[in-house]
Length: 250
Ligand code: PGA
Image 1 (cartoon, rainbow, N blue to C red):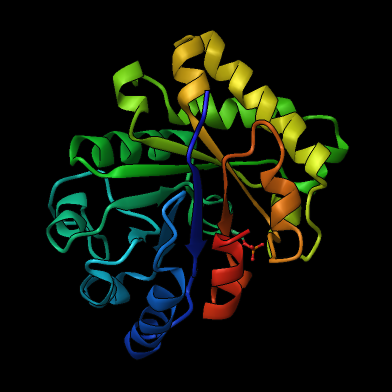
Image 2 (tube, rainbow, N blue to C red):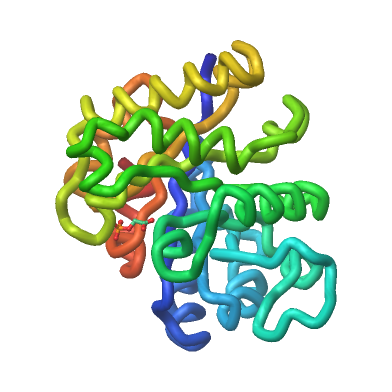
């Protein structure tokens, strides 16, 4: 089963509109001609419209980092899938560990968001991953399985075609402490097994599973060489065009 690699940047709360547009102008020239890898940038809400406009006709897609599950309503401060769709956003990152850690994201809210994104016709990048305490307590597989199955509850095999998973061990995010390729591969293979049990072999084999957590130009190639690692979700190293280019051209 050949799965197209998918490298996505996650800018978190970095870059004003002018900074985002400057990045896009530079990055799209650098990645032009890359066709064997899918490329996206997850940006703050305020950057999204300008990014979509600047990246039109390029091979870089645009992702939001969160959304609300309702179509509209009295939800001060929230953004709906329809709002994202109208401006041309293609993906939404759901349940990033920082959303779980600081903003009360749970499997239940993630599940509602996943369903809303799919109903709106956009793609989901769904994150899962254990904390250091959970890893040291031998709970990695339980936590990851709980995140994946809880967030994907009620989905069909058809729905899964628009879902990408991202395994992001919390202890490796922004810490410079990357999971070894073997450590990451072990969890990726486990996730694929969980998907197989729940959704069948075809859906599991087709699912792309990104690795995230201190991916850098100097470790990306080795990670991408692992059998069940199908891309990367990258924070810090995706903030500069030259580094982003190196990631995409691993
Ligand atoms: P990092 O972040 O690459 O800076 O570790 C990854 C992420 O949070 O998606």
